[in-house]
Image (cartoon, rainbow, N blue to C red; front, side, top):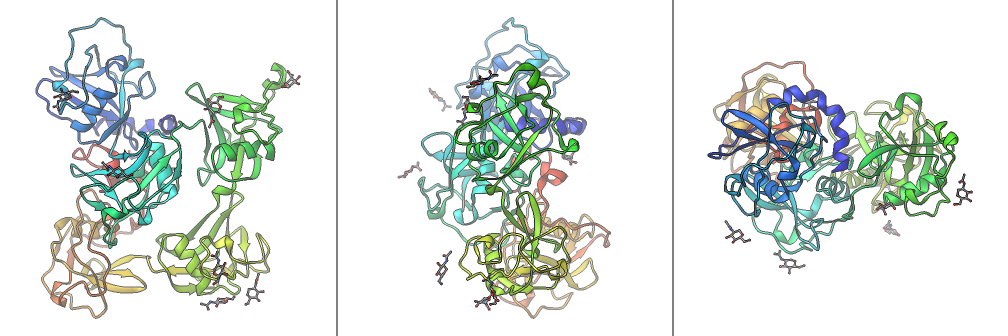
Length: 584
Ligand SMILES: *[C@@H]1O[C@H](CO)[C@@H](O)[C@H](O)[C@H]1NC(C)=O
Ligand SMILES: *[C@@H]1O[C@H](CO)[C@@H](O)[C@H](O)[C@H]1NC(C)=O
Ligand SMILES: *[C@@H]1O[C@H](CO)[C@@H](O)[C@H](O)[C@H]1NC(C)=O
Ligand SMILES: *[C@@H]1O[C@H](CO)[C@@H](O)[C@H](O)[C@H]1NC(C)=O
Ligand SMILES: *[C@@H]1O[C@H](CO)[C@@H](O)[C@H](O)[C@H]1NC(C)=O
Ligand SMILES: *[C@@H]1O[C@H](CO)[C@@H](O)[C@H](O)[C@H]1NC(C)=O
Ligand SMILES: *[C@@H]1O[C@H](CO)[C@@H](O)[C@H](O)[C@H]1NC(C)=O
Ligand SMILES: *[C@@H]1O[C@H](CO)[C@@H](O)[C@H](O)[C@H]1NC(C)=O
């Protein structure tokens, strides 16, 4: 929860827009709405009396009342009820009603509200609620269990096949449960009921909410409750965090003391200090300790100054900080660390996460890989590590453009079973005789693309690229929403229509997909559930999808794999008040 508050500062500029993004629910005498900040599920509770909306005092609205409200608004379960001026304040009146809910009421209306209690309550004490469409069931606490998600009013589970620790970190954080310790799958916490969602989250681990992670659901394999995903979170609120890095394991250090995040300043910050930070964050070992350049300094309050660790401490607060006041005052530089847990791999320059130039994040810097002896075995390790299937094409000679900066690896000789590229034999970090024109790349089987063929750019037979091959899509039980999403995604306007059978000829390649079920809240075809990938999906070519979009090609960037934060699609409409449902 504290982590989320930090986002507040830069989100508050969107406040005006957000006033429009309220939702209303009719409740007879009690109308309630959540007014909130873009990009979080943290909302201020407002209640209508007569024609006037007003806030509620935090001391009059507990977690039970919040549970009732989240449930009533179909926002899932209540995580917490932060109060006390932590968010942008409302401008209306503050009601003094107290809601005394048991927690199982279907509407706030049914909760007893004792008559007027005189209590001074200011705008600083307005209550907010954090609801979550995700919950953990059947664990030992609220912070472990089977992952369940509320979609269209029903709780279902998530398939464990692509659920990883980065995704789990985001969920733990979102539920105010610290960091993820492990992700036991295979129904470790018992089998759920309801649908099993095959959605794959592509979280970096730094997102504040699963709704901010890109998602793919198209063509996911069938999954049964034997494969329900689970997570065990540390359960402790985070007391240390790293900001503005590439992962949760590198960046500028902040510490939480007494509920407030503060900067850590030091001019003798060293590897011993950094080791303590990496250990406490469960981020592996320290790879570097640095001071932030002037332009990247923090601006908030200061938590710690002048830390002197021996290196073995389990917690930064256990390190020595007893400098004299004058010494303290002289220290003004923010500190940062890079822990080994920040190492990452990505593919760039190909409009998707599963194809492109290979880049590795190491010691706080992105660098490339040289193509000397780069072959299918190496490429397979890359695809597998990224959850992108297997390699279908090996790219050399900067096929996906030349990178810049470091060339991290050369003469990579993977056997193919390594789980991370840097486990493969090579010359060693930064050892090479290459230039960027030799940068290696790969095309993985899970790389997806779409197009309309045989018409013009904005009309034609729908084809998707998968497993290295273009194929068509069957139109059975396909709704108008799919057409709209395809046209928008191709930059062909906001709508279109199904064209008659065979209007744009017939395909000859695989028929990849059937039963594509896009709904309005999906923002790309990749998010729509469907039957699993199968080269023989259609019974005959007459089932292929033909589309005529209303618009013409605009010069826009396609919306493939966009992460939520910059996209209005992700914040949904008034019909979908909770940010977290947006991908379902
Ligand atoms: C709510 O729980 C209380 C006891 O905790 C019970 O008496 C009541 O019947 C329950 N109400 C509903 C609607 O389930
Ligand atoms: C809880 O988990 C156990 C196994 O750990 C399982 O036997 C039990 O059925 C589960 N209960 C529910 C309600 O899922
Ligand atoms: C670190 O120490 C502080 C103060 O002693 C304590 O509040 C906090 O829970 C500790 N954190 C961890 C992760 O042990
Ligand atoms: C700081 O603490 C150490 C031991 O904890 C002590 O030896 C030293 O004198 C203290 N220094 C100051 C300036 O208080
Ligand atoms: C890739 O190269 C390595 C040696 O560099 C070799 O052992 C391996 O068999 C090659 N893999 C393929 C698929 O050619
Ligand atoms: C990969 O397989 C080879 C034999 O094929 C084995 O010697 C090696 O230990 C394996 N490596 C890993 C990381 O599993
Ligand atoms: C990788 O394989 C190539 C060719 O098989 C060989 O020349 C090179 O020495 C190997 N590199 C390492 C680091 O093993
Ligand atoms: C939501 O916030 C993000 C990040 O500040 C911003 O980029 C985006 O434009 C905002 N969206 C809306 C609809 O205001």
